[in-house]
Figure 1: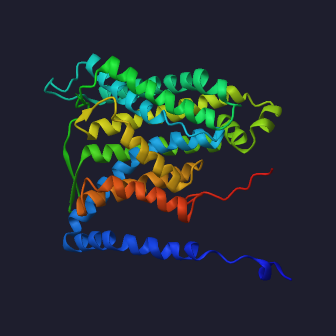
Figure 2: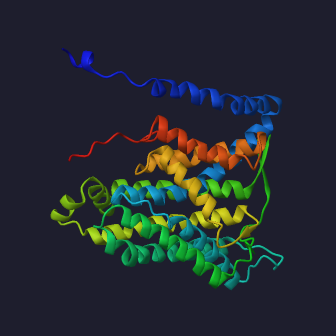
Length: 342
């Protein structure tokens, strides 16, 4: 008998799943299309704002996907590093004389200093977490690092509440807000700054991973940690650098998120972090281009859902995407199916 003849047919539930997903997605999609047809300019503005928001999610998703690609670990503390990055920018801007109540706005120096301080602070925090929390349990059963990640996340949230208090703080206007006309579409310069900064950082990360010795070492560890160690790759150092780079991107994302949000509090990283995790899964966890694509798609979906359905319903749609991806294509849009040898 041939392999085709002996192959087991797929269950009816698996074959019907795409049709069920399409049926459930049709009503909200039709509402979005109706709104786009009624006001194309508003639709275009929402798409631009969604891409801008998606750039922030993509930066945070890159941290998730880099750590997972190297260690196979979901770093749930990453969302709280994102929150620390926003607070670091607040303190740096305040030290330079720009506060939410100062009545002015910062210039290029304040903006660059805030970015640099936030990214360096988060990189140091990420490397510290890796050294003292994750490295000791690296060879433990997989459940142990997962529980450790959740514990580190809760520790950072509670330390932030003790240090910053639970009172929301207004993010300082390090950039003067203005309206920019893109043809018939009017958007704020903050949205364009978010998108531009995210693109620059993502391109820089891609170049680092693809064209430098550190990037080659990261890819070697991702392929086979033990083989990379035997070939002389300083695995501990490269893993620490991976955590540092991912956390630095989270710090930049924290600033961009703060510029677009009125308040920051110790739990500000929870929802964006979860959405960034969905973006990483959507694009293909462990796949850097996939994290970028997933972040942009999640940002657009959330913005369109908020504009044409309900702002309170938008998070449900985002997390529904996670369920659908896990059911239909668990390896993500750009991920590949891998088989483990036993």
